[in-house]
Image (tube, rainbow, N blue to C red; front, side, top):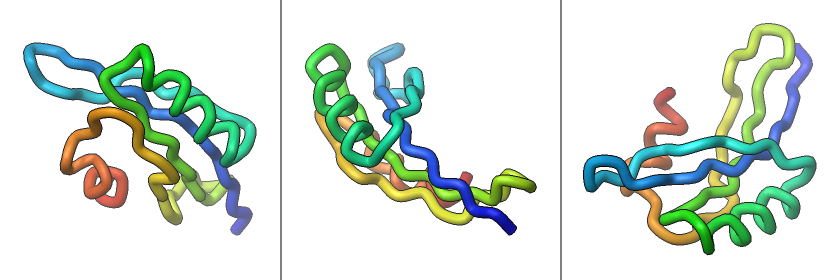
Length: 84
């Protein structure tokens, strides 16, 4: 089992007066994800920097951790990462 760590930025947008996930962008490092999320938060309602660890062969999720939150993030976002 080979674990692979990926860093990404999840954006949030408002649709029909609700905060929903928008685009995801990959980042090369943890600090890169945090910097990108913080910079993008000025143009979006909210962003989150996330670290995802998954099995490289099966794609099975090992863990997902929110590294930083900027702006508005849905209350149940952290739970949805672990559950899905």
